[in-house]
Image (cartoon, rainbow, N blue to C red; front, side, top):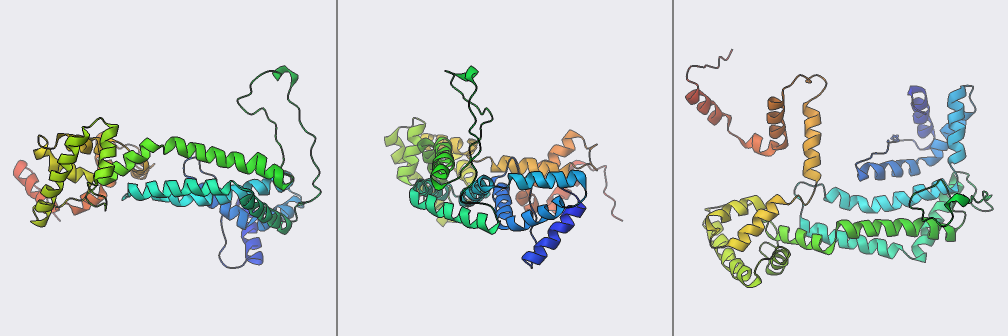
Length: 365
């Protein structure tokens, strides 16, 4: 159901029904949760217009296109609206945390607080009040789209093959159950989805992972919890540091950093800067220096790696397929570290080049 004809009709129907700016129906992404949240939101908000377009196309003489439209209309029932509304609500709730975890200047302590808050929110969703309100929203949307809510014809219940008797089934076997009423919706759809999300959050953001994130943030000079005793000691406990020695090191490190920063001798802006600052004192602060090296090596977030791959795709296009690996690697570093690259003084590079290659001249025309 794609093409210029369908798209033009889709735009015309939106202008007639809603006016103003038209929305595009996005394709579901396999990697970015934010794209899925936007796709569900746009489809739910424009669902009456989508059904209207499908009804117009299904009544036309175009065979393949009409058959596809009738098939999509047949699948747009109460179960479809229940799934769409549920995922739009849950994905919209998680979207803010997803955006925060991809920010380059991520504050890990704030991220931990939002993770705990999101988990508590999903725990609150697992009650009859939220299920009732969500079902009411589903019913209103179904009535707006002329989809039957009451007296829905139940499909014949499918039975599991006798060959699977006594077996423990770990994957889908093609059985699908509808959600004809509020109780079946709550028990078969809403609660299983919430339980799956919360279990996945517990696995990815376990207690030790949250302690690790708080500890790394406490080693960031720009953080309000910089060298916080409680968080750094918890991080040290994960990596077997002596608690008493680490406590003394923190006390002395605070004084050294404060004296150096007050005099203007150093400016610390990241965990890496703090690690470089401690390197001359690594014999004095062995445990703290080791934790800083751990913090700079652990990839807490994969957002930086994903941005690197996105930058490489922008550099090596179909017009630059003959680029050798060396040049490709150098351009990738310049693109990924664009902030540092823009801060470089090109006059210094020219001076170094002329001093190193005296027999080579750059002719400017």
